[in-house]
Amino acid sequence: MSVTCAYTFDQLLAYSDAEDARWHEWFAANPAALDVPFAEGRLATIRGLLVHIFAVELRYTERLCGRDVTSYDDIHVQSIDEIFDLRANARKLLREYLAGMTETDAAAIITFATMTAGTLTASKHKIASNIFIHAIRHWAQIATTLRTAGFTKQWGHDVLLSDLAM
Image (tube, one colour):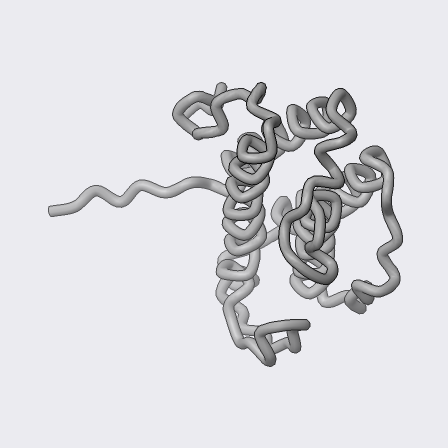
């Protein structure tokens, strides 16, 4: 017999809010880290990856809310404060959506076009969950890339090391 354990969206919000606040403060103190190379194109630097994380949160939340989706090309943020303002706007909308999400809404299936994965069909629950998993995956890449680039003074990022009550 197995025990069913799960993160609630409230717990994921609390964990990611705390981590994001620490990263915002860290990048404000280490601005050169924003220009550390990462990949290619929009993700050429850590700055581009940060914009990507928060743009995805905004765009997927807009889909969840049934709103017009902001074009990635219309997102023009550069400074650390502008980038985290994008995050704050996306997170405010996500919080509002999750606060009103019902079981029926969570089970609703939507189909939408993505920039890189083609057309996808998924439940709103899965899309909302992906917002958090997507960000956590990229934050791990950021932490590793920055440590490799010599930015070794960080903190423990694991949920186990957080203040999250479970």
